[in-house]
Amino acid sequence: SGGEQQRTAIGRAIVQPAELLLLDEPLSNLDARLRIQLRIAFKQIHQELGQAVVYVTHDQVEAMSLSDSVGVLNQGRFEQIGSPDEVYHRPATRFVARFIGTPPMNLIPAEVESAAGEPVLAGSGFSVPAPELRRLSAAPKRLEIGIRPESILVAPSAGPETPFPAELVWVERLGARSILDLTLGGAPVKATVPAGTVDLAPGQAAWCGFRPQSHHLLDPSTGRFLR
Image 1 (cartoon, helix red, strand yellow):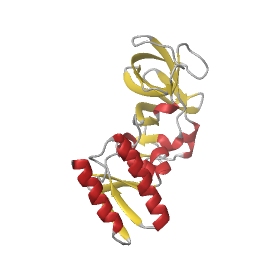
Image 2: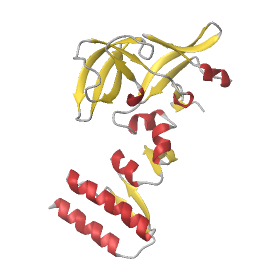
Image 3: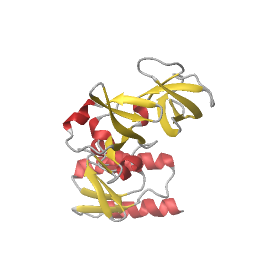
């Protein structure tokens, strides 16, 4: 089978002593159980032998779980090179933010306004304080707020942490967690919550909340996050 041929090829590559191991989609023909087993084996080989491995994959789980350093390629160019934590928590560009993460990072349009002399980020259905904008000398008027789905709070009623009205469109139940598809002021937003923590059905009103971080503010004109 294709999977057996692929495993044989991997074995032939590993058994030959070399300073550098080049692997291009080495697990693409294997089922999920074997993929997990071989990911662990590759990590052990790298740690035990100290062999450098260049591993090409379209599977971000493989990239995040195996690598010490991730290079995210787009149209033949590196968008960002960094540790798995860096590319996940501090993406450099829109492409990286939308490529890394399942579901990917939400990018919510907003405008910089002033309230009582303090900068705020206002969008359709929400307004949040943004004191970090005072440290930016040339922040654009229009921004996109990057929010990871797990950083969005959702509740069936309004509260101090969930002040913004939304509507629940769909619920994906994935065992230990659920993915909520919401509309916030007409904009689609995804949130991930532990299973059973939000008792809502599609079509019901929901309330959500989030806190922008200074390194998650994207300039739409450049496609890059402000630093």
